Length: 272
Length: 263
Image (cartoon, rainbow over all chains, first blue to last red; front, side, top):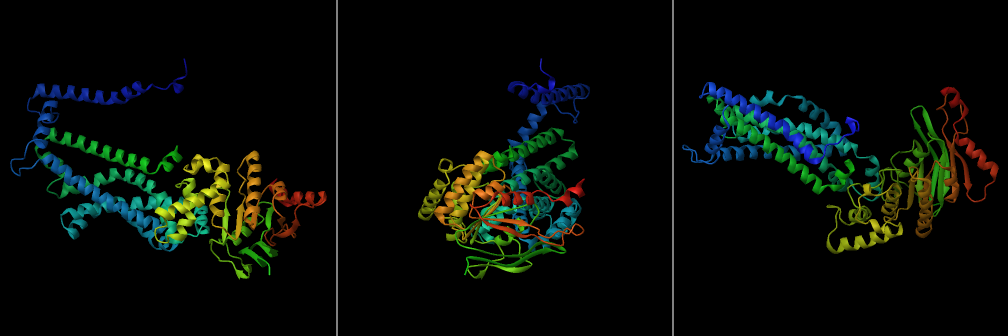
C-alpha cells in the first residue's frame, strides 16, 4: 500500500469525486425544499424543482404578455452586449496604454502614477457620478465596467511588458528594428496571451459591476431581472438566473482559454 | 587607419572608476577574446561597443566615425541567454531582420518577397546546422541549438562587428566544443570581426587571434574603487609561453584583499 500522498485517483474516480459535492448539494436542497413545502405548500423560499421548470418555461419559452418578447433571452442579450463592450474596450485601452508605458520611458513617467491612482478608486463609489454625467443609459454601465477593470489590466500589461528581457529589445535593434517595429513584432505578440490571461482574471469583477449597474438603473438585463423579481420573493426565477450567469461566466472563461492555447502555442508550452 | 579605434576610453559611475585609459586598435577580421575577473568591467566595455552604455571619456571610432550611442545594425550581439524571440519559429527568427528592413510599417513580408526572405534564411540556418528544426519554437530547442539560432539570426544581417557575451557559458562542455568549431567556421567564411567575452581562459586561447585581459594594474585596498581596469595583456594567440599563461590565470582568481575581507 502506497502512502496516501502518492495515490492518484483514476480518471473516472476523479470525475465522480468532482461531481459528488454538486450531487450532495442538490440532494440537500431537495430534502429541505420538500420539508418546507410539506409544511406550507405556498412557501416561496425553497421552491421545488417543478416550479423551476415552470419559471424557466415562462421566462424563456413563452412570449411575455406585455411586451411580446422572450424576457430570458432579451435579458441575456442585453447583459452580454454590455459585458462584451465593457471588457472589449477595457482590453483595447489597457493594451495600448500598457504597451506604450512599458515600452517608452517617457509615457511611463507621465502616466504610471495616474493609472495607479485611478486603480485605487472604488468603482462603485463613483457609479452615481457616472449616472449623473452620462445619464442612465447603456453608456454609464459600460463605463463602470471599464473604470472597474481597465486599470487592473493596464497595470498587468505594463508589468508583463517590463518583464520582457532587455536582451530581446537590444537584439531587435541590432537587427535593424525601429521603435514601432519593436512594439509590433517583439512586444505585442508576446503580450497578447498575457492580456488574455488578465482579461480572464478580471471577468469576475466585470460581472460584478455589470449586475450592480443593472440592479440600480436599467430596463432589462440579467441583473435587472434578478433585482426586479426579488420584490415578489421569486426564488424560482432568481436561482435559475444565477445558475445561468454562472454557466455563461464559465463558458466565456473556457473560450478565452481555448483561443489563447490555439493562437499562442509557444506561450502555453513554456508555462508547463 | 584602423578598422576600430579605441581612444582613451574611461567609464566611471560617480566615484567608482570601472575602466581607465583604454587605448587600442582592432583590424577587420580580428577575433578578440576578452577575459578578466568578474566585476572587472569587461561587460561594461562590451556594452560600450554595443551602444547601451556611453563612455565617460574618450571615444570608439569605427572606420573613422564615432559609433552610435544606441544599438543598431552595425553591431550584432549574442547574449548568454534570451537572444532569440520565443514567439517566433526558427525560420521566423532568422527572417526577422529582412522583414524589418523591407517593410518599415508592418514589419512583415508577404508573397514573393516572403519566399525570397525564407530562402535566404534557410541557407543561413543550414550553415549553423538547424535545418531539421525550421518550424520549431525556441523552447523546443536545447541551449546549444538556441545559441546556434542566435548566431544565424545575427549573421544574416552581416554586422560589421559581432559581439559575443559569454555565448557558451551556459552550455555543457561537449556542446561547447561543437560551438567553437561553428564560430571558427563562420568567422572564416564571413570574414567577421568578433569580440567575445569568456570566463573560460582555455576558450580564450583556443578561439580568436588576440586575447585581451582586463585587470586593475593599480589597487588601493583602502579605496578599491579608486582605480579602474585596463587591458593588461594584449596577446597574439598561438605563440604564448607557459609563464605568461600562469600569470594571467593567477590574475583571474580573486585577489588577496577580497579574500581577507570575506573571512
